[in-house]
Length: 215
Ligand code: B12
Image (cartoon, rainbow, N blue to C red; front, side, top):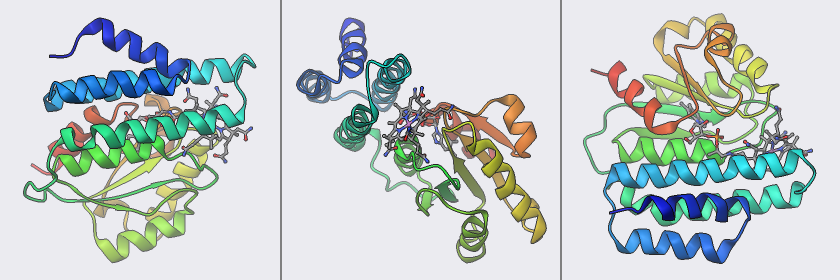
């Protein structure tokens, strides 16, 4: 069972970039063998901790080096939790081509989405960060996925996402795939502007949408 006070402490430890404390709390969670829902909750709390990091960066308390450290801390934390997110051996539900759009090098959220999608039984073809529209088109031609996931946290990434969707239209592939966008910058309005089918700032929720598309 996970304890709410520990979750609050985890979020603060993340915001403080207190590595020893973060790992200590995570190790005690893992020792209690949380179920998939509880593990997703823990992932969400780590993500909220990152929001504190973002605020401290904005008000000048943290610098880019701290962001890099925060990124590594979150990635290592997800690695510790990954075995609890599922065995990934379920029947393959479908394929998702995933990448961070052009101009954006953030990949922590993308990697979390990937881990959760794989745990839910999807095959994920991850084409990496800073990927041009043409790279997504090429990957779709090769892997023939049902779904394309575009990740991006910068405000500028919304325009890259739009260019990517337009590239699919230009080669007649837009109606062959469902497109979901995710990352800090997405919203309902951005989704309409981009021409995507769905958006989410929360990986577990978006996996439910992806699963619904394949029913
Ligand atoms: C860590 C970090 C970095 C690290 C990234 C390390 C890495 N490997 O990714 C480093 C240091 C490299 C970095 C660089 C920069 N960063 Co930065 N960074 C962050 C920070 C602190 C956290 C981002 C993050 O990982 N969040 C946690 C993840 C889990 O959240 P998420 O991405 O939203 O993902 C979740 C959902 O959105 C969803 N999701 C994500 N992807 C997908 C995809 C699909 C398909 C779906 C369905 C769902 C989904 O699921 C995830 C899990 O639930 C944010 C602050 C913040 N509060 O977000 C700033 C932030 C994003 N960075 C910012 C900036 C300005 C920069 C730099 C320009 C800094 C600089 N001066 O050089 C550069 C950008 C370089 C570039 N061209 O991309 C700004 C962006 C401002 C803006 N509005 O555009 C922010 C908001 C900080 C700030 N408040 O100013 N950054």
